[in-house]
Length: 111
Image (tube, rainbow, N blue to C red):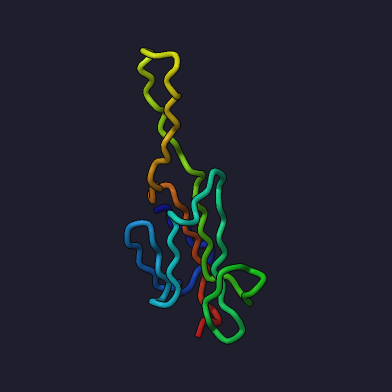
């Protein structure tokens, strides 16, 4: 995972387990489940009561942002034997957590 720190100060604690990230032992997000055929951006914020929420509209300030790359596919091998054979479909590759970017913000008001 690529980790970026936007500003100076204490950051929210987090743990990564497989394709899941858990913030402050409170909010867990399965990144593989959120991956799409396009890049996905997730805002993690704290609301006015200090609770972690997903989405900037429901939060008071940023805690973290997650950028998940678009889903990748393997190219199927073609045998070329039978023209009547149904063509093999590409298969989705598991999320590569090394390509996920986690951006962290300082916890000025986090309770």
